[in-house]
Length: 191
Image (cartoon, rainbow, N blue to C red; front, side, top):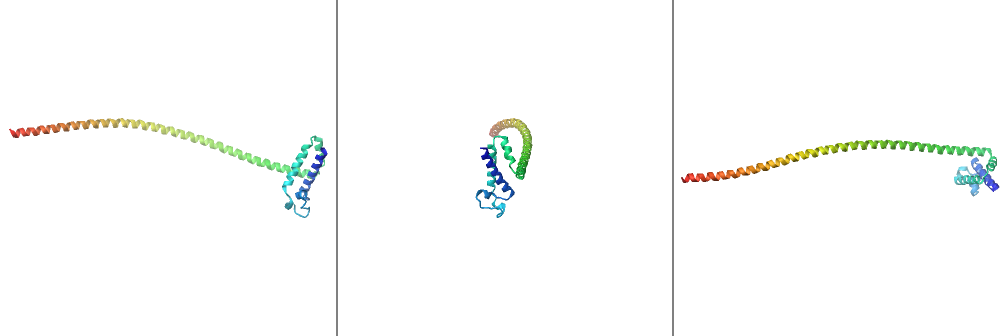
């Protein structure tokens, strides 16, 4: 099992070393259509085989249970290849961490903005509550004023009714007196 993993790892590392160095392309290992020196690496290089090779490397390393086996395998990797892969992973990780920090800053900025919005909304609710209370007091004052005017209106209507009754009564008395005056005139003429 150790020898299989060693051979797989060695083959994967040699393929990666060739791809990274530019002497071989990914197609050299997949279908053999591109040959070194005939095509530029950018035309033949397909990133998918590289990803498969990296995954194969991970699986091979996972199969090595003992740290001594990993150390022995690592000692077989050429120095420039190991250095280049290490630098490549470090660059990739630093970019991921940088994006994560930028995303975290964006999250912090968004959180701060939302906190500000929350405080603004709390202030707006407080102001609107005060305005509603003030409007409620005005409405209550207007209702009291309306009730007072309604009482005055009712009193004025009663006085008007009494005045109409008085006037009707006076008109009736006037008519009675005029009738009596007419009768008296007739009697006076008759005498």
